[in-house]
Image (tube, rainbow, N blue to C red; front, side, top):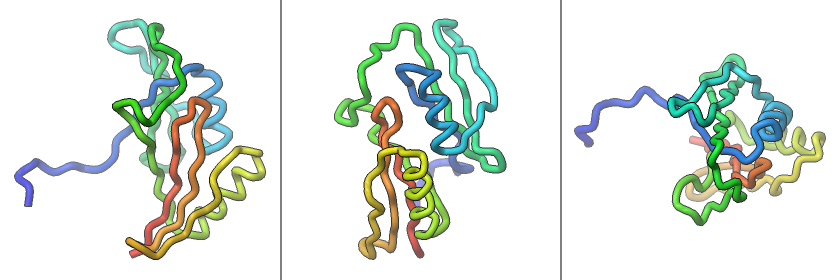
Length: 139
């Protein structure tokens, strides 16, 4: 057992994007997020458009930095590899894949497995190439 103080759960994720307008439109259409607010960075050289999924505790900050390198995302660089969003059933994973198909959004085929735990997942990439995983894991 750890001596670390408790955590209350996920709060938010912030990702730096190349084109904040393109990314906001994509996350709004593809994942059903809406803008909650805009937050100015302390250094005043950038800002974040913070998106949410109404009725959930999920918040995603799309960060714009004036001096960002604007290179495409690469999971092999130190930092973010991907992020995963939980869904409540394998059927929901398939529903998300059908949703992506209806929007003509590229995604991997749904993967289902029983080991190491029962799971179903679908992967897609945002406009910057960041991998997003929608996943259900059974008990």
